[in-house]
Image 1: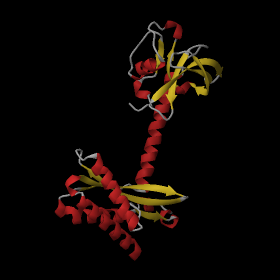
Image 2 (image 1 turned 180 degrees about the horizontal axis):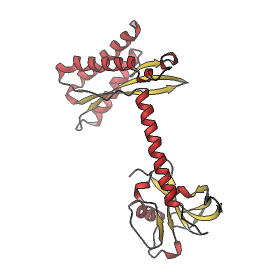
Image 3 (image 1 turned 90 degrees about the horizontal axis):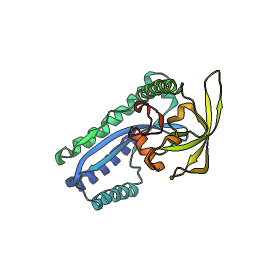
Image 4 (image 1 turned 120 degrees about the vertical axis):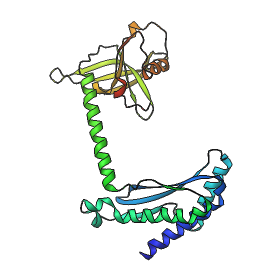
Length: 264
C-alpha cells in the first residue's frame, strides 16, 4: 500500500509541475480511466490529459509533449497510473464495481484539483468506468447490434440479383463503399440465403481483376442496374451519390440510411 501511495504522489507531483509550467496555455486537465487487458492480466489505468487552449501554437503543443516525456522518463515513471485487477478480487458480481480502484481514481483527480486550484487550472474528471459498467455497456451494444442486424435481414430478404448487376458493400477499415459486378450467385431456395462473388470495379467503372468473395445478402448497401445508367459517372461519383442518399437512374435498391453502419 505504501508503494501505491508513493507512486501516486510521484506522478501527481510531476503533473502539477508540468501544469504550472504551461498554466497560461492550459484549457483544462482531463482525467479518465480505462479497463485494459495486457498479457492476460486486467488493469485499471488512469490517464491524465493536459488540454491546451485552441489558440495554442503547434510549437507549444510539441513543447508540452516533450516536457511530459522528459520528466516521466527521468523519473522512471509511466505517464499513467495502473492498478492490477486480480482474479481473487473479481470472483463475484459486486467486485466488478472496482470500488478500490474508484477510490484511487477519486484520490488522484482530487489531489490534482486541490493543488492546482490556486493556479486557476480546471481539473475535469470523466465518470469512473468500472468493469460492471463496461459489461452492461457491451451488453447493450450487442442488443442494439442484434436489433439492427434483424432489421437489415428483413430489408434485404426480398432482394434478387442477376449476373452483371452492380453491388455496393462496405469497405472495412474505411468510411466508404466498394463497388463490384455480380459474377456468381450461390442461392439456397429454402432459406432464401445466398452468397455472391463480385468482380471489383475500377474507378472508370470497368471490370477490374480483383474478386470479392463470399458476399452475403446482408452485406448489400445498394444494387445498381448498369444498363440503366444515364449520366456518365466514376466509381467515386457513384459512391458519393449513394452516401448522400441521392437518387439517380439505374439505382435499383438502396439500404435505408438508418441501417447504414458507415460513419456519417
